[in-house]
Image 1: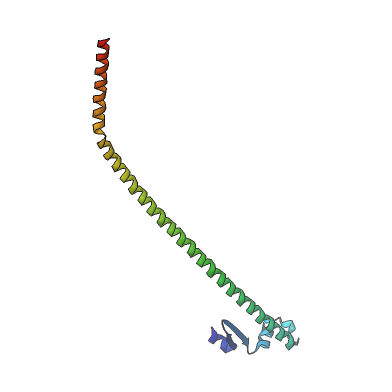
Image 2: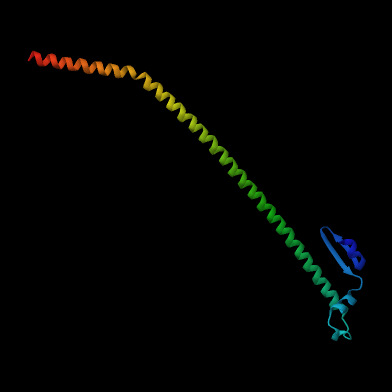
Length: 143
């Protein structure tokens, strides 16, 4: 683009800002204006003022774009931080669920072991009931 512009005028660069001044600006303005104004002289001071305002406008647009770029970069960094926090939370939740499932299976296994260990208690309870029944029977006979 710069080489095409250089054919029509002067291109200068100040940092990221590019300035273009047409070689025949007055002629280009005349060509772009209505034909009724061909005889109307253009005041060079007005053109200089217009050029200064255009430069100010370009500078303001450049500042606005830099500010917008900075704001978008900050928003992107913040979004990345939130995504990482979310990912870490999901990972942590997954680990917690895994540990809870393992603990539940361990509890179930120990409960089964306890149930097996309690089998003799059931037999003893039956024997105690039988002894009690016999004692009650003997007591009734002795009365």
